[in-house]
Length: 230
Image (cartoon, rainbow, N blue to C red; front, side, top):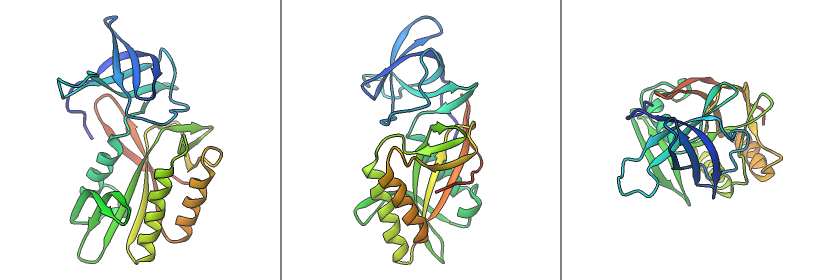
């Protein structure tokens, strides 16, 4: 996924009210940026750290910038939670994820049961539903999800379990927007219910695919699949 317009460099002053961040640009101007991440952003908030913002496309939008990434431990961490769905969609459509190759019809945001699943992929043989989650939290060498309690995330897992029981391929795809980790796992201490449901989903045949991506001010690209521990 390439950024359509050049990003704007600055430094984080503070994040507040969950969806807002004050950023000082290189010319000294202080601006308010929209933060798409509603979670705690634990382990990817550091005041005075370098950040990049994208200018808002809608001139009428109250916040004129969107916070895209922050530099932690010398590397960029992607914090825009709207990107993983697009990254996954493009990668599946272009056959860039080995386990999800061979689909000639790929669409986003498909309603099934009581949920809306992020991606549906089809070919003549099967239908596959793929739910996508953004991962930024780090603990030791582990990338963990979620960084706050997510009843919505548990609901999506339950839907994947139901689909699998109906004989439909179901995949839980985690997009890890940082490269300073080597293993993925559920954040059991933060949301034990989600962790248990993920374990159940795996036992029921739902596939789990954690993908590390490389975040730069020019683009976000898939690096590799990561091992996971449930």
